[in-house]
Image 1 (cartoon, protein in one colour):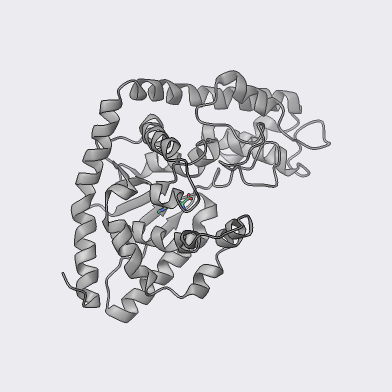
Image 2 (cartoon, protein in one colour):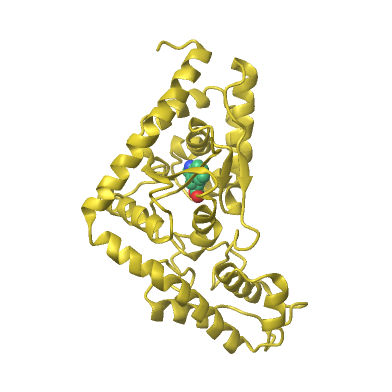
Length: 327
Ligand code: TRP
């Protein structure tokens, strides 16, 4: 039997090339070696208020983008978190073995709670639900961007604590982040990770950005005071453009160095834009085809949930048995 993979994306904001290079692209690569489950984690999305109509539309958009990006529905399961009740059930059981201090220490909790006037309990709880997503399927591997590594460490801590309190129950999941592209930075602010919620129009390249919009953002990206690429002294903006090119093109370091050393920034940007547009075009084409048939998406998500529910339910049964809860 193949080992299992679980990973997920929140259906909020606009999926961008950072999400693609950090997560989705590596999902398409692992899907033939593992039994993969890819979740649209809507219960995580509502830790911050979401307009209900927008959320519904986003769930469908992300599902279509998964397939458009190369998730193969004949091999991988695409599902919506809230359609499998066991996520919430296991989330509660894991909450009860998780010290509050572990949650308060999470950097994303600190950042998100500082930005809110009232801090919803769900924001604190967020990583426990994420642990439930993963442990529910006994996933051996979780491919994510590198902003998720702390959450994955916590997942292992929670699994370990449960196992030591109640006996060996959960598989310990390993984290996998891509060698290049795990952390794509904002084009306008290359010292900040590319964000779905950043409002600056030059910040992120959306997976569905029209070609001229994407090109303009790249041509305006922040660089540094050098005129041309110098691998010794380049600033974060130039390094980011090179990393984007490298991750899309799957070039090795030597080829990148040989090709770009000494290249003027205007030319560098043109080449990065070409690479990005060339890579996005087929994805956007498939996206249009998929969304032209809403029945296909509905069916995909319904059958995805049906396929994984028995796995999830059997883990909940096992956990209940371990804890002495009523079946
Ligand atoms: N926290 C992840 C993010 O914001 C999303 C997520 C939720 C996830 N559950 C998960 C990722 C389980 C991997 C595995 O990107």
